[in-house]
Picture 1 (cartoon, rainbow, N blue to C red):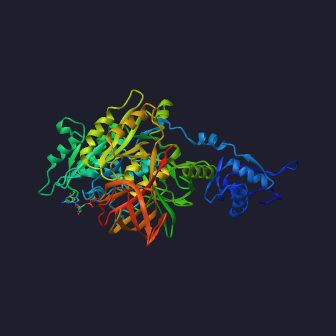
Picture 2 (picture 1 turned 90 degrees about the vertical axis):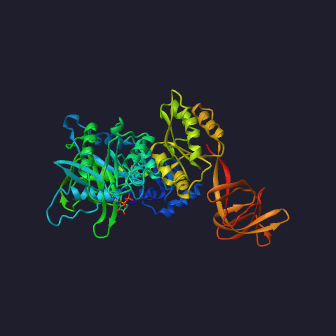
Picture 3 (picture 1 turned 180 degrees about the vertical axis):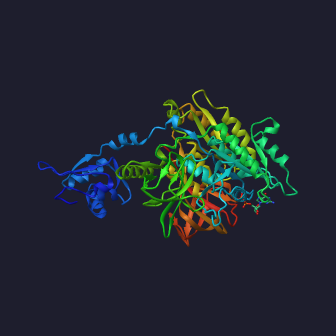
Length: 601
Ligand code: GDP
């Protein structure tokens, strides 16, 4: 800090300090900030700040969030007077939240995402659409991959998001972005509805996005479009020909057949939705993809959802900001402005934002900086506070925060889906309904967690396993995953939760895994000669023996040996002999999963 002027780095971080003759210098501190940001505010080094925090008994790392109380105590130790930052920026944001002028609204092109099972032709269809409707035939205008493109059908535009699949779609939605107006569900006519088709249907439904079906590969001799329609009906999508309202168009992405008809139908569905935006206001929208270009710097493709984005404007994208230096359309041409539903690659932000980040134009750089930093703090707090947990859902219903309990259900086998689904759907009350946003068999995956985040729901597993990536994501986002072995307990817990009677429960926290590599007989039974692949195992831990994704046995680690010695604990990369309480039927290749029960608040 420059003690003469009283100015600090605070201006960079949004804080400010003022020196007065009659008192200690003041330093303005936000409600929450990271250690690094606090150091910036003080104009001190992070190490110095960490030392002061340690003296106060706070053990923190450089990127850890500290609150106002901790920061002001340290400021005091440094002879400064702390003042909380006023949330004045919020008032200003009110002004920044330009009202949408209904009178100025005009129709905008629909934005489409293509979903479906792997290999059913999503990429091929996106290519076919791009080819059949090249807006511009000028030589040299090769389409650029910017993450989205627009086609023109007799003067009407349609925007396609170029990252097919419901994963990208739901990942964006989990960040709070809604970019898609219509989902095209691609189903290969020779293959029919497959697991990811069903997943895609669930994801589109959870987002309340209308579905148009493209029955693809009709050029193949073994194509059977009628069977696809039958299967669609079984999943609640009744096609128009059969009296429903689902448009299903048979296409061949390979031969470019019926693509035109598909586009026409997308325009019909769009018209029903009356998609409109006000092009006169400052732009806002969502980041579709972003990367660091080795020569140009951070390059972000945004979808303008309302307003018009222009060169030179100050823009915030998630936790980064900048001034729009240049914009490129999907043909790589420089453009000066982008209107609603138009995707453009933008140059000028300071760092690479994330897909799904919301962007908006601000009136000045200072405001942009403040908002970007607030978004950063918001993100660090993560979704934990927003997440729904089974134990808290009753309170959320009472306060009107939630009207339905959204559940993603995963079971070990297909056969257990229906009975559980039926029992759960019966449980809803007037105050809150139970809604199964997705039900399927198999492991709990990252996708399931994304869907739960996006729909503020919980995940219920029945005799199923949680994939490591899913577990990490769920932990960081505070998504409640519950696994049951008995249907009665599962249904009972949901029922109790809805009635506010659910006691805090215990969740499984996995400690580590070991792979069985040899089996020895001892007096007491069998010992599994194993190799610890991750984490650690502790004698007395609860443990499951897993074989081909099935839990064979669930009890405790009765004995643990390293060479000839009994050990209390063993870590990754070591070999050991494991005895499991009440279990002797080990097979080579079995996985021993050590876990403990932890109380869930
Ligand atoms: P994605 O995984 O859904 O993106 O599927 P792709 O677009 O990569 O297509 C998978 C395979 O199906 C590729 O070999 C395509 O050439 C083929 N394919 C896609 N559409 C058609 C079609 O309409 N007819 C035929 N015969 N093959 C197709």
